[in-house]
Length: 389
Ligand SMILES: Cc1ncc(COP(=O)(O)O)c(C=O)c1O
Image (tube, rainbow, N blue to C red):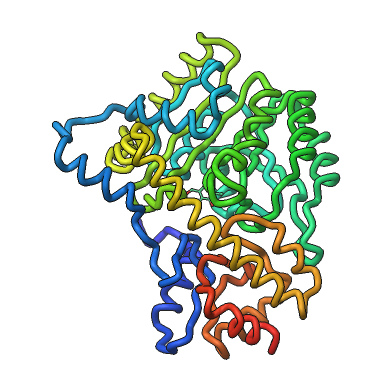
């Protein structure tokens, strides 16, 4: 019966990895895959992660099951990092998940179980967002978010579209470092959006996958914290893949801020039963590392320092690249104000293919680039290749 299945297209980003690997040219550049890279082109293991792993090897007493909710100490420490001190005062249910994707999926399944019919997604958004919500059985509505030709955030159109949402609809927000555009809301826009969400009775699901890669650890959660302060109920999905460099360890958590302790407890039991019927229990190793780091002042300070170095590297390449590319595409001066690893370039697919074939510069057809794929020394040469288009 397997032959009745329809062949599914390869994920374009994963397909790009294969093409990049097969390219034998020395000066090839990978601006595709969404992982941090350093000046040597490596995706390093944080010093604090290595140190925490050594401790775990020495001290871990068992490999017995962790339980569907994961480690409550990890869940609490990560919540404090995300929601700040104010987060502790709200009735909250949180469980450890397999990465940020697992967190978004658990939130989606919970929304479906609550009877929520529809979730609003910005255009553009991370391609896995619609896939996850569809898989959970939610209908998807879209609102404008970012205009590639003008590199502008379409806040007024976004607000206008959300005024058409029904009370009880969910709305997905990126906490910081928007993927794929890098375009983020101003503090005033977060305030206005929080008021709008509260007024319309929408339930926000905030996806926090890049905390520390934008303006800094606390600043990257400022918008999220504004929304939490304005609404009675919210969901937050957290990924530790990027900011702890734990991509393959599948580390994250999902949280629900509820209006009472009873409601929070009820959400917790639902998170647990959804997890149990899905993957049963989350993997332990990454969460044990994060918990060790966040619970130890010296390790935490070292982790923060290394993350800040990464953030500054990406920001400095971003400014250099924006200065170069804006010589040809004036709108790309805006790129310097965007944040995180990604930007969406105003290129036609033919330009993307020409860069790939003629110059070994790899990016997906959407022209989303991962700025961290560049080393400082190669920025000028790469800019010249773009300008030759
Ligand atoms: C916007 C967004 N949300 C969530 C994730 C989930 O990441 P992971 O499942 O690797 O933790 C990503 C990763 O690329 C992302 O870009």
